[in-house]
Amino acid sequence: MIAAALVLALAVVPARADDVAAARELDRDGRRAEAIALLAGAVARDPGDHDARVVLGSMLSWEGRYDEARAVLLPAVGAGRGDAARALVNVELWSGHPERAERLAAARAEIEPAAADLRVQRARALVALHRLEDARAEAGAAVALAPGDAGAARLRDVVVADLRVWEVGSSLSVDAFDDGRSPWWEGSLDLGRRTALGPASVHVRHAHRFDRDDDLVELEAYPHLREGTYAYAGAGFAAHGGAVVLYPHARLAAEAYQALGEGFEASLGWRGLFFSSATHIATGTIGKYLGPWFAFARGYWVIPANGSTSGSLHLNLRRYLPDGESYLAVRYARGLAREELLTLGDFDVTSADTVALEASLALGRAFELAARASVTRQGRGGPRDLLDASGAVSAGYRF
Image 1 (spheres, rainbow, N blue to C red):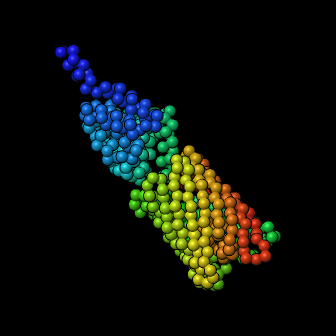
Image 2: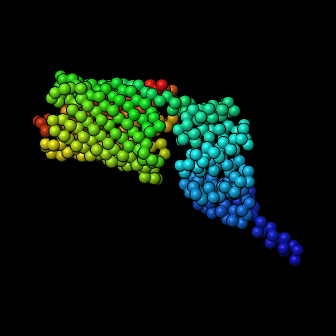
Image 3: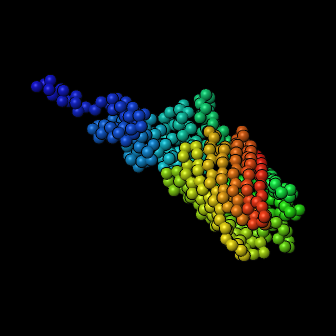
């Protein structure tokens, strides 16, 4: 009788280590739902099984089930578990509550003052709160505590780069045609600044086409409106005083971008180019992030004051490099060749097929270098089509 009771008691006591180990194995095999169910059962049988709580809360957070993860982890945090506190900091960061994450990391760092990983977590929360000087101090402390921690050093470098709020740069592009006409040139001088609301910049553009020259001064901004939503606004004015030379008298632009969840992003916008009469352009984007890849389609619908409307579609595939800023890209466009229409010559194209390769590289966190090369078959309504070989380079320096 006693032996039977002992067997029964052992059967209902949760095997904590076995449950956690089995759940980890299921997760490695791609069976996370089964792992979560196993751990949830262990916690239901023994609410004090904090080993199971930590792993269960982490897995729930990886699935984006932040409210459930928070509820599972809080008792373990209250019991003094440092691994639970770290997991909960991640939950608050990923769920858009950096202020909670910062408080949690700071409180736990008082208990573990030599823990570099807690300093890194707090620095990430401070970055999200735009407290960059404090973030730099925390990241620097993490590097001092763990000089060999590449992640801490990388975060420190990123924060230092983010503190470089000014950027100067320039760009130059050229279009060469196969009919012997003179190449088109366009260049710009750029000055930008990052602010708490988002980056803003001023561009002074100069174009040389058809043996004519013209200048445009343009202001652009990308304000952050709310979590997952930002906008683009632009206003440009030509330097010429009389009739249109190349640029419109004025160019106005507005666009809103929205994260849709599951890696999707979309935008909808408008451009107004005011030559002797107004030309309106409706534009929109739909795209999806897939790990380091970003695939998106962008469309334009041009509505001139005189003449027929026209549209274009640009298909883009971008591959981000490990630094998170640099990328390589390929683009195919059908319709108008340009991604942004600025001068009179951009509207000469009635139909076009364009293939472009692009690269943007962040060098040493202070320098940026970008290049683009494209080939376009342009239909212009004349006796023959044109081939346009285009190239562009730009460089920037943050300080």
